[in-house]
Structures are given as structure tokens and as C-alpha cells.
Length: 148
Image (cartoon, rainbow, N blue to C red):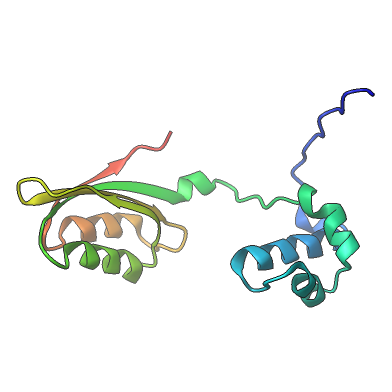
């Protein structure tokens, strides 16, 4: 038995893909988002056969151009008082940022360090978000972490 040759990948515009592949991608997205709970439900909603779904599912992957550039990571030094972190999170949400991850360390000498990663795709003015965080009550310091 000969070893299987690695499959090549391509980036292809959506408008030239066959309908079965597009519907497979839509079904996978529905399953990921929870809009469909089973493969049967997803393929029924997009008008695709189960066999076509299973044929293409492992070969269809979403592509987000510059997704890494849409994520900003922040380190914040916060006063250890009730509601400070909650207010920070509400401010991010109010500016349409989507928090991807957050971690807060144990408070030491009245302050706690928190790190958070924010999807900035829908944030209209990224500089305004940084300014809002820096001027928030109870926030001692905010730093934007570099992306690598």
C-alpha cells in the first residue's frame, strides 16, 4: 500500500464554487453556531443531501482574511473593588467589541491584573475603545499587547 499524498489547499472565491460545497459550508456554520443541532437538521435547512455533506465536510473550511489583525489583546491593572471588571466588560460591549478571552489574576496590594482579547471587527473606533478603558473608574493602567 502506497502512502497517501497530502492534499493541496486552495483559496477560491465563493462565487465560483459548486452549490453543494457552498451548502456544505452553510450547514457546517449552522452546526457551529447552534442554529442546527444535528446534521440532518442542518442539511434539511440548506437543501443538501446528507451524502453530499459527508463527502465535502472535511474539505470545506472557512477563511477569514486577516482575522488575527481583528483581535486586540489588552493588559489592565484594576483596583480590587466590586464592579470594576464588570464595568470594563460593559464598556467593551457598548463599543461593539466581542471579548474572546479574559483572565484575571489574584489581587495583590489592592490591585489585580487582567488580560483580555477582544475581537475588534465591529468596533467603529479602536482608539476610542482604548481611551474609554484608560479613563474608566478603577482602571489604573491599560496596555495593548503586540500581535505576533
